[in-house]
Image 1 (cartoon, rainbow, N blue to C red):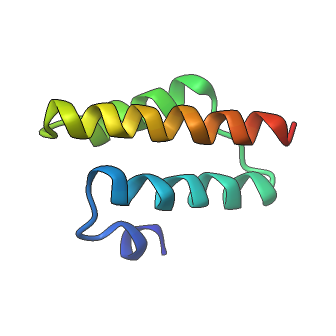
Image 2 (cartoon, helix red, strand yellow):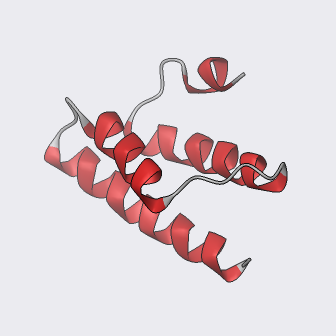
Amino acid sequence: MAASQTKGKSGKDLMPVLMALITGAKQKGIRFTPNEISLIMEIMKEGKSKEEQAQMDRTMNMASSMLNKGN
């Protein structure tokens, strides 16, 4: 499921999918540690331009703020 949702996406197009997957996992009781999420993010940034990396950081920060409000 996750592979089909992320196939061919990069940068800002991939982040909403990632956040939806994390949110869906959270609803099922699956939790990712901050270190696990950071590792996923670093892997996703590999080979991306500085602009794409910055966009991914901004999107992740915004999504993290939204997820933390739900706790």
